[in-house]
Image 1 (cartoon, rainbow, N blue to C red):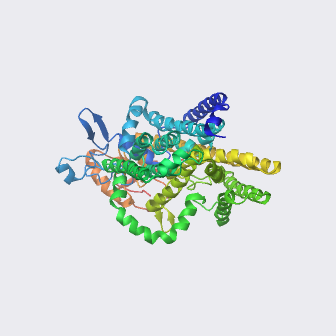
Image 2: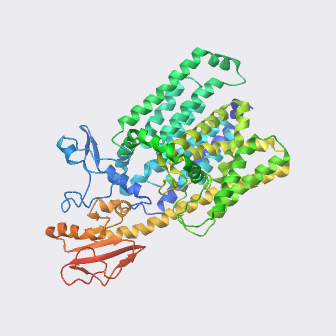
Image 3: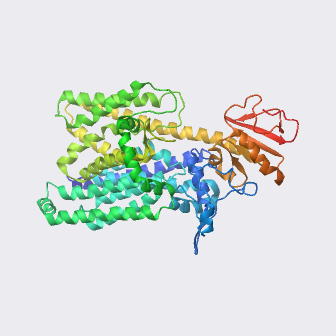
Length: 604
């Protein structure tokens, strides 16, 4: 069946179901966001982005910069300012002397500017509007991509992407991942619906990718995969159209395609160099030779990094044994190899067994009672994606839009994995922070979801026995359920964490001066930090230096916030600090000790 035949069959009813699915997903997102505090942040990166957005202002005169620091009167040298990790840094003396007052900004300048109107209008809740809308639209565009292949898959795609992949989780965070994913999916949609090898298709692809690269540097891997796919599909053409394959097969056409393929690459590089105000972009580009050389040293560690990227469940504590990764890897390998074996009843049951293995291991972790705040891999959190490769043989035979999407998926898997290993591989594996599903690979989840549903349809038509068909659909349903459970757990954990952080925000706000050795605390309570002084020092004894600075300004009482225990006799660098209220108090895990500055210390 051709794409046009598929679109003609049932396109009317499918659009109605697609609209209903989209509205349902949007309703779930809005309800989920409304049930959790929004003035505190699950990840310190989110609070850092708010602080950055308040460091810049846009007017007819252009951009102006001033890093907010309520403690500047006490600490004009910024000695107790926020740590360097992800936060905006004031311009150094040499830069100020030359008239360049731009701070060092670690996040996307574009994202900061877009975030400002919502925050100015309705406060912290306004920060979530843009990511939530982009995450929801990512699910909708995924449905449009599926619709271009088979209209009957569109509604299921919207629901699956929206509620059973990490797109759900990241739509509820103040992060660039959901907007960058939307840009990537818009480019893929243009790739599927445009004509292969045509310049106008290339322009439609490059435009959202240029925006995406300004949001997240990982979008460059999507751009490279789109260009490779655009060229390869044009080269190979359709086996049903001799004119296309003959025309594109000529040498002159190949030269044109190679020339046009260089255009988006040049555009992407220009975008990145124009965006050097973002230190993360600049660092990765300027250190490219060093990273490539270091990459040679990291080659022996690639297997470990691949394991972390695709199948390991790094939950921060020993919840699962080494058999977990082994079982997941074995099941996934069989799922990837199975579609290319010769069809037989034995092969069918081996495929189902492999799929069930992935679902079982993933489901066991999803149902574990232990709480965890992060999962770094791709297939653990969305086990249904293990079956996506079954779409490749059918796509290769038909050379329709599913073929284009499959080529893109393979190219993006290869290039994206290489980029992630290049940027984040370390001797002990991948360097990763808080994640719920691999956030650097977030666009991969919707793409593989579409291909998984295409594969499910192909399997249904090609199955040899009704028993194996029933077994397959049972395992697929189980895998989809596990994916939804992970998202429920992730969103619930985010809500619980934010509720604890809301208590931290309240208790911090009750103290006029707060000093902390927690690098992340000012970020997770960023709205409070923007209103009143919160000072940071990694060394407890350095609190004495801060007291020396603050006392001349009338400070006579301050609170010290920490997590770890304060042992009897522990000094903060001075002997004249007296504990108020008899000792430290714990607020949802945060230990707070209030000190009076005076004589007769009995602090601890």
